[in-house]
Image (cartoon, rainbow, N blue to C red; front, side, top):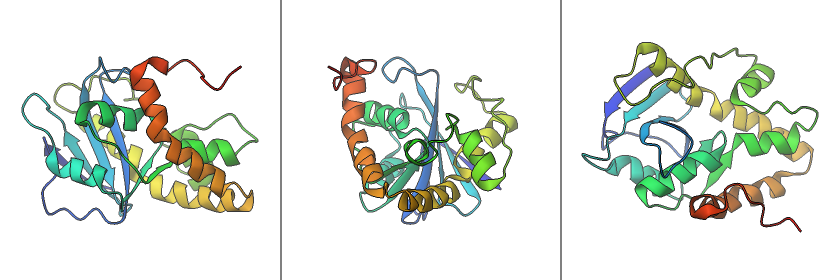
Length: 202
């Protein structure tokens, strides 16, 4: 794995391909309260790009162009959180989303373990560490933090490919796509006060 660390934005001419794995690190789980600190990208080539975000200085224009490009598929694990973070901080609407957590819940109904670590282990036979998950992302990043952050996007393309085969086998691909499309509106509900309220309940 190769890690490239950038300050404030991606280089202008970086080639990210037609599908990109994306993750983010924040100071907490509330997009309105907790600062966005880091965004991780990979096009599935064993190279991970880390962007230290500093919205007090500048917006990451090149990163935002990628997020807004509807032709690029954005692969997340638990897209609901990351998309809400980007929507709130960058004031953008992200389309063409793939969420490995949703795909896992629609296919791996034999288990309640749908975390990224669980998917890496079962589908790819990769053991990853989540030791840095709750660390402080607001300062200078240690090598351990960089490796952790990069690993969170390293395997998403391969996981997507495995889950797609399962979705086709279980005849749930259309349902999965409908769920991915709804993330655009689910994040609107989250940001506007309905995060913990199921409006579909009786």
